[in-house]
Image 1: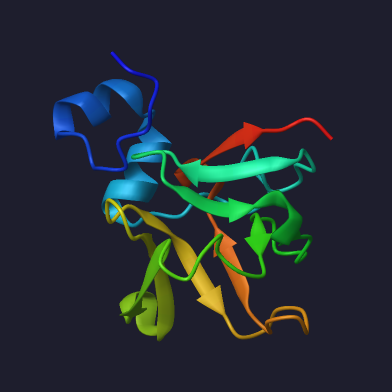
Image 2: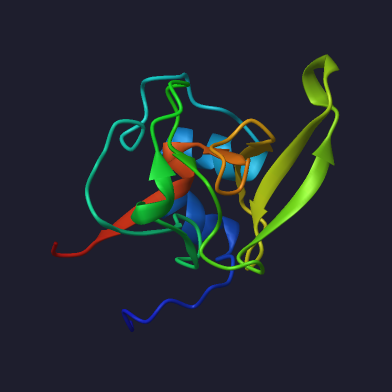
Length: 136
């Protein structure tokens, strides 16, 4: 099997074998991990955050910042076509859901209360991400 990312959604059997219960719940059932519990909320390592489902590149660590929310937050995706945004009317509110453009995995939500550079806060679930670390 090749180590080259396919950027596609594997079938359910392959995904269930590879993802833990929380990763499945977040990415396939639009779940949310509890604040301050994910592996990346307070992670400061350099690298590229990829989709845990299909390995598509999503966010750069240089665009990550501490939003104080307990989830990894970014000012922007790695490219305009890396993610897709949808209106989310669940839980009695209107939010903007963010999904991976390559495989449709739920990643989190984007809010208009970010830092001045973009004014956006891409609030992602650690369970939807995989960090490809780079040397500083």
